[in-house]
Image 1 (cartoon, rainbow, N blue to C red):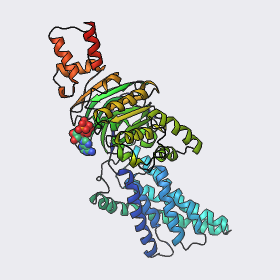
Image 2: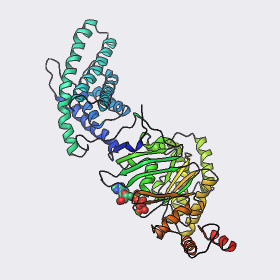
Image 3: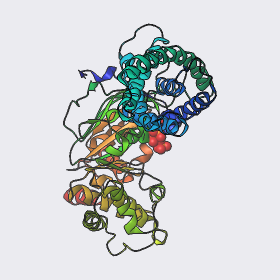
Image 4: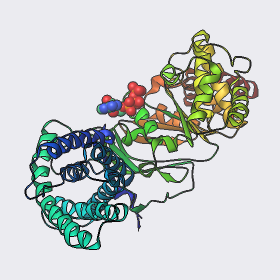
Length: 487
Ligand SMILES: Nc1ncnc2c1ncn2[C@@H]1O[C@H](COP(=O)(O)OP(=O)(O)OP(=O)(O)O)[C@@H](O)[C@H]1O
């Protein structure tokens, strides 16, 4: 493993939807392989192994991982099982997956070492995948059908070698038109572009042991040339309550999506630098794996609710992660208490108020016990009372239960009493990251997004400019009352 010291040079590219390309391309290629297998004539009993040739092409084009390649091999085996005229077709169940894994191995080797033109890898995989698969197939036949050794050595093995040579020729011949066709139809980016970078060979270690460590992070959506995020460095420590604010379109939600791994793995695009969650590089972890460490509640929280009743909703995430019924019961009781939904377990979700449904969305992300909670504009559909109530809840999750909180909001006055840090983003850049008072002061002095400043704070700043002095800044009406009493 190569240890990366300077993550600012690290690039990760991911084409949106690319995670399912291997399924589409391999399905179409295997369909072609089946047709060729059924119609191609054989010369003296020799014909290329079209199934192997076609799945090798699919594996070269989409670079699935070993598990996915095994899946492709198993599908090829089942097709062969149904169409084979062999005396023991079940041998395909071992030989085809082995062939697919051999091809994946060849692709892996060639992705690291550039040897010859782009035609060389399909030649190599066509030959070796067929050789490995054929060798396993004839060896199983030899033992199961108790064939004479002479037939095995002098009849079957030469045949395996000849068919492997045939496949070394037909695989690249299929690869070139397939690559062009799929690229033209939009199934592949283009001839040379990387579908998805692979960071598995790197040892990625965060610079700090913070809950979230964002290091030299830049991000470009799709094929855009203007970055949505520019070289952001931000650390969220254990127990922090961080508010991120900034004008519309400055990149707050993008940053939030990067924390949960959805950027770039779901949205696609190009990322530079790295985002670590609990020490894990987000490019090296699945989004579902990160979800057990960091939960997110979106502005449109209703889209996160998928079941009928309150109890089912909270149980859903736990069932998906294999919790036992006892564990689900125990954990559900804890989260209902945390979010104040006790006694409402049997209610239909549609019968809850907006604020209650939002609490339920929070409960369902807390069900799997993440240590970090991210809320993206949680108050956009709440009235002032609902907003106060929500932040009381989030504040108690932070203080009483030790959950690290990241909130994105425009509406600052209700959240500030609970926050210990405040970050300001402008045009994709992190302009200020400090205690709330200092960030608010920065916004006021530099005339940045002053519309979002709580009016009590702007009053405080005006009084200060007029020569009045107070012991503490006014971040809330209570602080102003205390300040006025003391002075
Ligand atoms: N899916 C997307 N595809 C392409 N560009 C996007 C996408 N989502 C956001 N952007 C662009 O990225 C930039 C940052 O958007 P983002 O939603 O992160 O900002 P924001 O600060 O959360 O805005 P708001 O406060 O309006 O929600 C914007 O220029 C936006 O147009």
